[in-house]
Length: 290
Image (cartoon, rainbow, N blue to C red; front, side):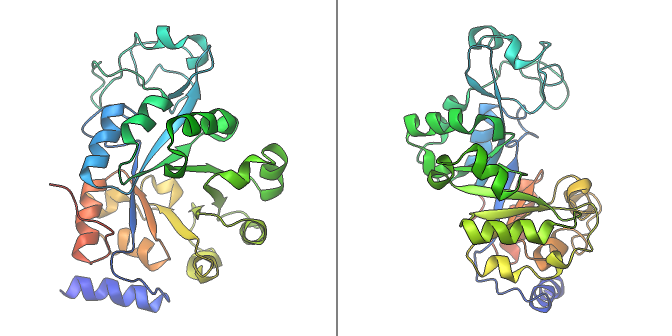
């Protein structure tokens, strides 16, 4: 009880006005601890767990099919070598995805279409990382599968650059700007988006945690946009990360800190643990599925 009161005190001190069931959880590359990263199974397991969002990475084959692959090559995550663009879909499907121990499994590289059809109609959104070069192709798949409302497009570009490249498309998609808090123009980038769009959220990344926007981002939240913070790699959150919370048991300087600094969406490599913790604080949108 003392810990819960401490967390709530932090939230109130930071000007947070969380209603019950407020914070959304995003599973980074799906449930990769129990299935190969970016595999169809990893996304299905994370969805069954009860996460609100799964994150995936888009790439493209030689014959123009969108597939899910984080790296520019398939070397690390499969028993193949080279770029996805070196292979047709039929050829790339012959490789097996590796699990966390490096063992080759029977899971193959999924197509974007396969993932969206598998998650269609389920209470989960899909965050499209590394998608900026492929917005038009992704949009076509989403329209074909009837899943456009489940997808979140994102990019670390300014509004003028986005508008120039995707002039007509941006009015038809759910969009989240990615903003580097360490850059001096971060506030200007955010304000420009708020002036011209209604972003679903802002993903705020930072190696140092001194930005005034982190101390007070109510100007974002009052527009209805969410504040997306990452609790995975320390390089995205100045060390307020999952491992600190789970391996060292220090939630005060990790998850609690991120909540106190405005997070209404947390992307994590520890979705099960984070969901349980948020449930204990009555800050979950939906309960963990057993």
